[in-house]
Image (cartoon, rainbow, N blue to C red):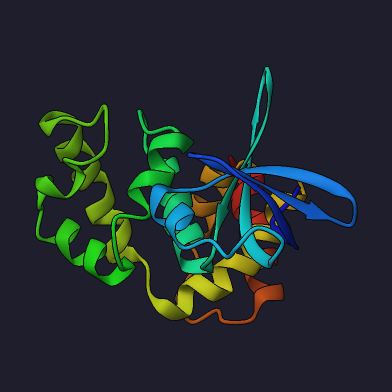
Length: 188
């Protein structure tokens, strides 16, 4: 799985770019906000990535910030939101501002995203409210390593998140978190 790219920007389009990494060009979709913040053609660029595997192809989505990628993962897990909408939603502004507006149930937050009307906006807000409240800063970094390891073992992301949510908060060691999560996943 491709989770990070470091290379040279060689092509820039409206919704995607091409990065040359050691002679291989990677097409990476970016949000409108990220496209506006790109370096000049020929300059070095580093991106955190999400690889979307579909029946008819593979798409890479890029993020300058790991927190934006984490938020994208949460958005992408919501029923009815695909990666193309999730990438635009994840770039609506500073992450803390977006979280605050979601917790305040501000449905106007999504008005600039095509295909998201008032009904869908409220559905997204309701699903995100619970997920955002459950995320603490300490938990996110520990969860990332455990998620990555379990994902590498072939478990689906949603099942991994559910298993990690069931673990006691006092388990901080990643090795122990992975071991306990495997026990939970084995019961399902």
